[in-house]
Image 1 (tube, rainbow, N blue to C red):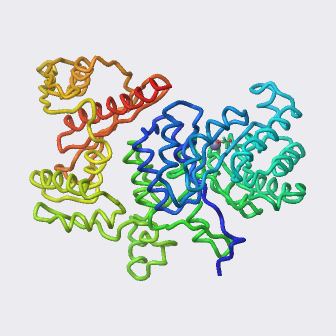
Image 2 (cartoon, rainbow, N blue to C red; image 1 turned 90 degrees about the vertical axis):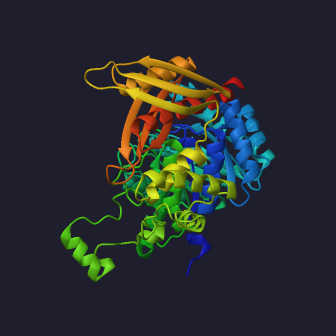
Image 3 (spheres, rainbow, N blue to C red; image 1 turned 180 degrees about the vertical axis):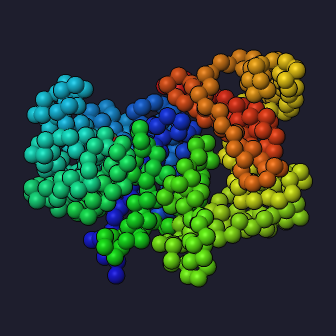
Length: 511
Ligand code: KIV
Ligand code: ZN
């Protein structure tokens, strides 16, 4: 029996704490697409962003608030009244808006960052929550750096904000410093000390600097917290946040000892993880729990033998439970639209009719030059032709001459704002020549932070997927491109990054 008392609320911060990490920037269209997937996954609260950060962030939170109907939509803000008003303006159109306001409470932050006394912070926290409560009943307060805060003072703050009407109080391990047991004790201490604690949901928010974020969050839940703030693929500041999929599957798989449950539809976990990787261009490490490529791969002969005899010998959860498709059916050039549509559905992609048409068209083109098509090929098509459509810049043609007896030269034909342009230039190698030509044509000069090529499937006819990361002001922007020709994939990835920079530029110009 699942009782409401044992229900854990999943607060997803991929679009806020996750997105602020280097290389994970998303534009508003990408954020909205991901928010809709989070809703499908069944998260209770989507933290859509930090509206005061920029006009673009504000707009993006407002857009998500306007489209999400089942999950709550939270906007983050400091405790200053202007910050709170800005967050409220962004989220007030949501079906269930939530103001999430925070201030640091540790002496380290007070002395070096805020230059405030404990009494001043307490007053500020009270005033912030009071103001937020005048706008909505759904107010969450976070005590930043709670795990390095004097316990008695933390308890005082928690009591005060609940007194002002906070319905959720979050205890973050902001710097990933706490050990799981110690964190569990801190939560238990708050339950023992704070007189009005039963009036609020206690939340945990842990970072992975010491690699124990999930364990720390679970310890907090065991001690009585009933909300966990986490991010898909564990992305987030520095080493990341507690990973949503790991927390949820630990709760599911070990319900026997944890006794807790969530409302997450676990079969959407893997598609959500893939969507994030495709949008951001940042791959999940292969050995990542739950969603890594090897998470359900059994290599050793003894293990394989055991699995054939009985799945539970080496499997504590089935791949199907988290949405990993049971078979990677091979499709070919004779596969029809219905087969592709069906495959897309099984892979967890909920695409509009015209998007399915786009995928089908590109699928046919690729299937003509490639013998077999796999799920990974379809994923690469979706990433490129549906999620990352060309905007300002579009590649029309690329030809590269290289070798150990030639000066590597690239000839590029592109559409720039609808006008066709062509140019040839050289470089120290074929990739450098391609980048140099595109840089010249687009009059851009962003520093290349990362260039990575991998094959999406086995075989020498596999599509190459290229990821590039370019530095744009304080951001690192990723671009991705795929093609059976890795140099074409390289040009597409570079152009994709430029298009994404363009969308950030437009956002920043509105500030
Ligand atoms: O890590 C942290 O303390 C945060 C807060 C803003 C909740 O992200
Ligand atoms: Zn955080």
